[in-house]
Each structure stands twice: as structure tokens, then as C-alpha cells.
Length: 231
Image (cartoon, rainbow, N blue to C red; front, side):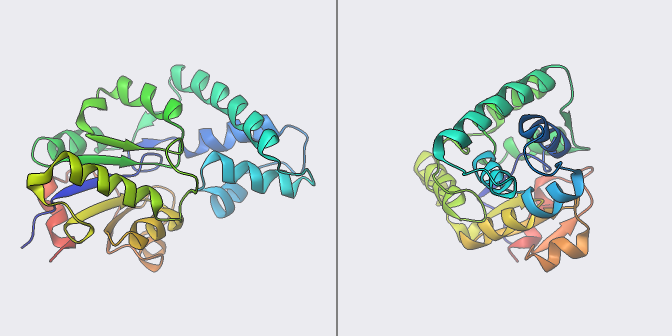
């Protein structure tokens, strides 16, 4: 049975329960512009997007031209609101995630590959004391196109391979952990096997989206569990 050479984690919905906070803060920024943003619309249409793509969608829906400046303004405002709420304790770790990350980091190189802004991620990782577990972080700040585009996963793989040349890390021997169809498509597009986490979607939905395997949570799992994805 093969053992992964590296593990690449998504952030929202894999490590932390933050999708509803993203939805709420986007809704606050949009205000009365366009139809109200509810959870079901976010879940069906925006989950997995980075903030730029999400606001482009919302602005078009509101009949507002999604110019780069208008998107930037909304993204910056949302980042401030999200950080305020995160500091107030509204971003909780998902069951088993911190323990699983620490166990994996003890034996394998880890990367984090997220469509969130680095400013959204760093404070949460620091509060969970997980920042040092990740050798490389690729965020919305690092790529032009968000998931489902595979660029973010390809870049994270390249950085991990360069940092750990003795590990011979490639897409064929690494594993991604995701919770959305766009995230799964991104990882699969980069050639990675994917473990789906049923945070916001069901296990059948994750498998239908292309996950190699899916579980309810990371609770009780260890790095050896991922070997099955490569066998």
C-alpha cells in the first residue's frame, strides 16, 4: 500500500467551520444591492469560489458592473468584517481537524491550498496553533484564477516539491482534502487523488463531484488512512 508523499489541505470546510461566516459577511457587504444573499444561494452558487469570483457573481446578479475596482473594494470590506468576527471567536475548528493535521505534519510535508485570502487564514491558524504545521500556503493572493481552476494546487505541489526534493513529491503520490465540487475539480485537475469531507455536502454528493473517497469528518483518523487513496 502506497503512503502519500505529501498532503494538501483546503481550509474553509476542511479545517474550520467558516462557510456561514463567509456568507454572512458577503451579505453584509452587498447590503441592499441586489437580492438578499441567503445560505442556500451561497451553498449552491458560491461555495468554493474565492472572494473575487463571489463578488463578481453577486455584483452581476445585482445589475452592477463588476469592475476590478468595485470587486477590490468589496473584497477589502469583507476582509475587515471577517477578521473582526474571526477574532470574536466565530471560526471554530472542525471535529478532529487540529489533531489530524498535527499527526500528519509529524510524518509528512503538508500544504494548504485555499481560495480564501491570507489575511482570513493566518489569524485562524495562529489561534489553533497550526501555522507551523504547513510548509507551504497558497491562497487567493497567490493566483489569478480561483478553484475550480487547478493552478493553486499545481503551484502548491511545485513549492512542496522544491522545498522537499528528497521526498520526490508529485501529483501521483500526493493527496488533497476538499469539501466542495469546485475544490475537488481543482485538485483533480492538478492530478491529485481527493478525500472529501462532508461538512456542507453529503458523501454521495462529494463522490459524484469526483472525490476518490469521502468521510463525515477527520475525527479519529490518522495519516495512514490516506494510503488507501493511492492504492
